[in-house]
Each structure stands twice: as structure tokens, then as C-alpha cells.
Image (cartoon, rainbow, N blue to C red):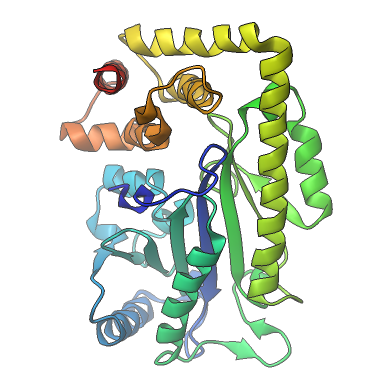
Length: 343
């Protein structure tokens, strides 16, 4: 997995990924919360038939949540391929993921269909182009619930209209370090954006990673919402870069000491929790982006952040692990990675 990270990454020092998600419902079915198992199966088959007919040149893999182990479910969440909400509805939910992992179609989450596209770096336009193409093909065969005044109808009123959520995951270690993150979050809220943790709504920011997304879905077109977010993300990128420049000039030795301490801990630790690993990997990414460590292999450190998540480690081990065993394997993976980068 993590194939979606492959390819050019625009503004990759700050912008990790761009995501577009649209919510859609089929007119002849009630919302998933009240959908019977029989009707949820029928709806799933309708979507599968449409995908089979419309995407003959693109291979999608289909998974029912009920057929996956809990570890496998969590691994897909850790990969950012599905939402945490999808795995809460074990009997009704399923998803299709394209072979390059840049597109996922979630079935029976909060809405009947949630189309997600995921592109590395700051590239909302490519993510939207792909999402729109998939949306159009599904809508050509499925009767989506739509109102001429309100737009697309959704289970949650906050998604009514375009049904679109555009988000960019950003790495903001220096804005966080200087204590300016809360002021930034408040300023973004005032212009209609929201800041969430690494896995979206209800999750915390780990490793100085934040998701910035639109709050409103009604009143603007999809292109207008994306354009507004894109412009503001560039301002956030500039703010983080300027803060890095300021800290390098004014407190260079302190920052260098901080990031090299993290590098030393990662290179030598024998036990490592996920939370601690994310903190130190964030510092090492910063060290690379600020030019303290020149090894080009470190530019892909976000993939390592995904690979050392708990469920990913459990899956790669093919066995149930104790916490100590998990921590030991994580530390070994990180040491091996850094050793390979230096070799």
C-alpha cells in the first residue's frame, strides 16, 4: 500500500497530500443509518455494477468491511484510504480502491457513496479532476438525490450543496513550535476553513501534521471552494517557510540540536511508541527540509510515518503482538530505514 504517495509532490516540504471527497446518495434508498441489511446489499450491488460498466480500463479492488479483520480495517485507515467512520458500520459498509490507490469509493458510510481522491503534495486541481470524472461516471447510471435549489442532498446538513470536502495535509512544525498554531487555526476558522487532526474529524494532530479543509459546501461551486482553499494553503505554506527561516537565523543552533537529538534517538532506540516516533520523525523531516541533513532519502519520510503505524506493523508480522513487541519492531524498522539512507 501507500502507492498513492508515488509521483511528483508540489510544495512537498510543507504540503503532504491533497484530498477531495464528495458525498452522494441514491434517490431510491433511505440514508445508511436506517438502511436495512437487505437494501444495503442491493445498493452495494448497484454501485458495483456501475463501476464494472463504467471503469473497464481502471481496476478497482472491492472489500467488504465485514470480510476484513479489525487489524486490516485499521491499516486501511492508517493508509488514509478509508475514513474511520466507514469501519464503524461493519455489516453494511464496503469500499472500492483503485490499483494506484489515488481513488476510493466508500459505500454506506454516513452517505451511500463517498468518492475520495488522494494526491501527494499540493495538487487540489488534479485531485478534483479525478474525483469529478469518477462522480460523473457514477451519476450517469445512478440516480443521485439532488434538489434544484439546495444541490446534492446528504445525511448531514453541513454537506448539502456540492457535498464536497477539499483538504490538504500540512506539516507545520515551526508554526507549532513558536506557539502560533492556535492563532493560525482561529484565523482559518474566520475565513470558513477548519483544521483537524491527521485522520480528519475527531482526531488529533500527531507529528505536527494538520488537515485544513473547507467548512461550507453550499453557495459556491466546487471550483470556487477548491480555489479558495488552494490560495489560503499557499499562504500557510509561506507562513511555515518564513517561520523556519526566522528560526534558522535567530535560533539555528537550538533547532539543529533539537532535530539531531531526534535523529540520534531514532537511530539508536530499541523500543518506540507510535506517538514518540511521529514526534521525532517530524523533527527529522524538518531537519531535511531546513538543510541540516542532506540525505535525499528523507524527503519520503511520510511513507515511513505510515509504515510504522500499529495496524501496519501487526499486519506485516502476521501475528498478534504485545505492545513491547510492536514497539521493538517499530524501532527496528526506523533504524533500518535510517541505516539504508546513510548507506
